[in-house]
Length: 404
Image 1 (cartoon, rainbow, N blue to C red):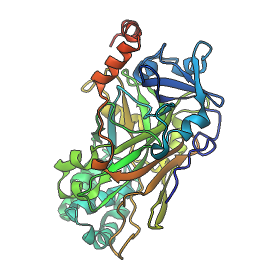
Image 2 (image 1 turned 90 degrees about the vertical axis):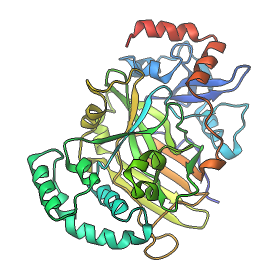
Image 3 (image 1 turned 90 degrees about the horizontal axis):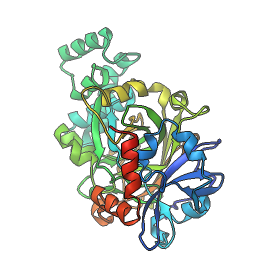
Image 4 (image 1 turned 60 degrees about the horizontal axis):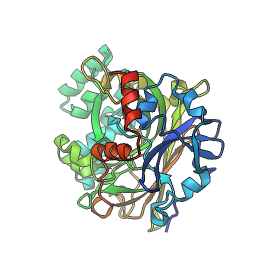
């Protein structure tokens, strides 16, 4: 069986980074805590910032995460990672959660031209993976070349749109890929994402699905991009291919959204320019001996991260608790797994690893959505928990300090 490796070296950025996250803390009143990593140790920031949303509202969040003098040490990073593998977890010890809490979880689609072809294939095949190989060859020959160096929303894009309509091959995915408006959708509900080491879910009725390795931006209520992390935007290709109106069913299922392991806050050495240079790797290892690897080069994104944030948060749409934004992927696995021409789909037990040197490594094992523990800890549970731990006054104080 493929292993979920959780050692320190393969989990964290390869350089000096300011990292914050969320940890489930045991005790008389167990609950989620906001933590920062300093050296090889984990410190509890919850008495100062009860939620990640509160921390990211601070303009100097990166500097505050470094100031752990009054914070209680939780454990070593190695101990935390070792106890975060769901199958061997000791609930009496701290373990990793997804690093986001009150933020809305949004995602962008069709931001890379390579993945655009695959979205059109899903639509034309009506979710039937048996037709994918023939359609892929035909569509690549027909529209692949014409999409190179096209700026979305430009006059050249509009001219291409008219030409493709005349050829009878226009698609709703082409609209959001080269048109003026980006695709932004709700990937998952507040507090429903899972962290590194947890099971990640695919619907048992899906016969054509895949992971989507992405960089995820952490944005506060004012639209300031405060940092970034990694994400797996699991997609049921057959569901979405049958109808775009099934996007919610294709994307938002129990444990179908993984984020982590930590949020890296922007500072002098890590910023949006770093994100633009990132190469995101995906590795899949199956219990059947199958393996697959691929990469996404952020330099090939068709809309800048700032542009995608502006499409998400603007005068028409606000996020009072902030949001996280999946930037999209260029990697859609097409390698045959079982039979020639049938492409890739997940099997239970697959270990999915998403990594890039500046953000670390996110790892999860695939299971069916109905076999993973149901999501029950929502917003009401969070605030009841904070009240029981005596943190309600701090929540109210932060609300007064930073009115929305």
